[in-house]
Image (tube, rainbow, N blue to C red; front, top):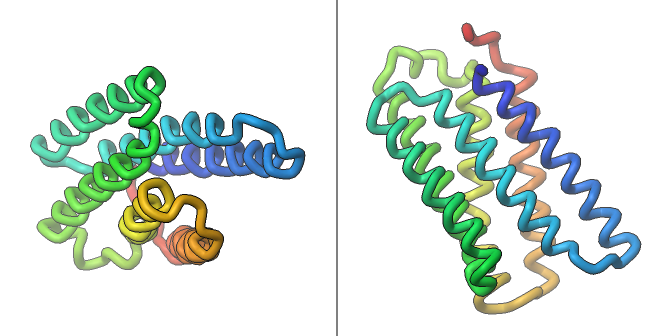
Length: 179
């Protein structure tokens, strides 16, 4: 399956879980953090599969496979050892940022660098990299230091808007890539 199909599944998952989260907030239902924890599993795996399909080097593919298994192990252990749940988002952001750096390294070392601005995969990577690198300090502050400061949510919404604008720009301005 090409990487953009995983990207489509990622977008569908985001819309689905954001809608569920919106209903939980609207009706003040208990358990909205469990919904977010379940979303984390799908988010990580779809983004990982995107970069597994995009990378070509053996080291990159092996690294992605290993870190996917490691994160999924940590994720499932976090349901048994609940203090670990606060760290899964932080770990997710670091691992996925590493995947994107692997892809960008391969892109820089290939002939595809000539037309990088016309590649949807480049704009997806820029958007994800911006989002995950910006959310590392956000989630660190949210879970470990400040615990629910309201101004942090506005910062996070700004980061999300820029991320989605990069997705939109990439979808509108990229040329069709061979599969």
